Amino acid sequence: MTEPRFLQIHTLHSYPAALLNRDDSGLAKRMPFGGATRTRISSQCLKRHWRVADGDFALSNIDGAADAIRSRNVVEREVIEPLKEVDGISEEVVKAVEDAFNVGVYGSGGTSESGRQPLLLGQPEVEYLQRKAREICAEHPDDAEAAGDVAALLFTAVRRNEERDNFVAFREQTTLPGGLVGALFGRMVTSDPGANIDAAIHVAHAFTVHREESESDYFSVVDDLQRDDEDAGAAHIGDMELTAGLFYGYVVVDVLGLASNLSGSRELAGDVMQRLVHLIATVSPGAKLGSTAPYAAADLMLIEAGSRQPRSLANAFRKPAEAQVNDAVSKLSDYLGKLDRCYGNGEARRMMSVEDCDLPGAQWLDCESLANWAAEATRSGKV
Image (tube, rainbow, N blue to C red; front, side):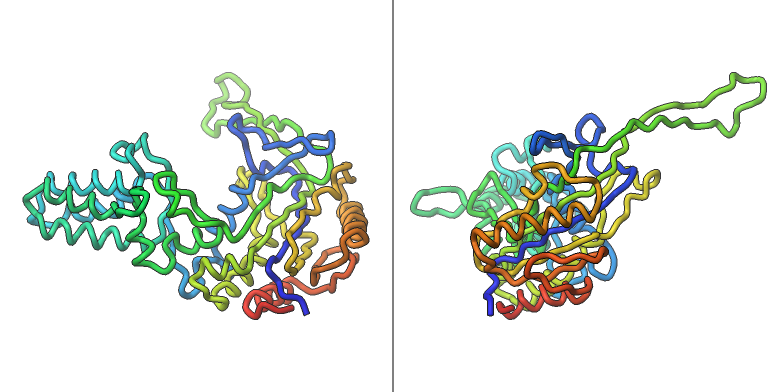
């Protein structure tokens, strides 16, 4: 019996004629690997699509999961704006509380929008701020200086090293300070490192197992109201890059870290894991949705449960494979076998595949059964 500290999820997804993830120039993101340029999808892109996905397996539908907001304007729009509608509170008091809260949450540059970095705040933290702001304004409805001083004190805790601890009140008052998103993917708070949350789910950039395949798509737009006596031709012409590829994806779930971030709830961690498997398999990232319909389900998913340090199987594709699922699976199988010969097989493995294939030591399951297996391993700590 294996005690899974980590769940490793390996996938192969195939997309034709798509522009899944663009760089600052509007072209597909790329990376060099094994002497060949590959098309890639950033981890940020993948995580965002998983966390905002709707449907039966949406993370937001989990009972007990707190929502989160990533923004530079949480204080202004979620905390202060409701106070402006309250009678009897002067504008100066509201402004003093707003400035103190912005500095407390976003750091010394927080009084201007340009000085703030987008920050992830869990709904419990937002509600805590809302409650405290109401209380301060109610206590000092006409004294802006007093309101500002009290608001500033809310974010200061004197410790041995006399550091400012902007988020001490949040941690003491909430069980999921960064919401579900923070518990899963972590957060960094530059104004207070003590408020950082270590990510329990680690996501690699996906990349094509073969050399990049791309072309420039020339397109034109016809004006429906163009008259016969007007110049013939298109009303607009343009071009965009389209790519095709078979992508290798890799995700690691720190099971103990996930449970810890979820206030120790193994049950909630299992619910997250069950949904996450479905999301990774079926949710497609992509720009140009209307013109490329870049929707695809995984051709293959392998999940490994074990206690050893995780290791990617990306090196199976250091030498570019053919852009075919069978060839990619063959290289994956060969490389996994080589690792087993060197280090032994310390993981329990389950897999699903659209094609008829096998991987060393892996038992075949369908997607629903695979998700349930991963969820049960997370809840029970055993496979």
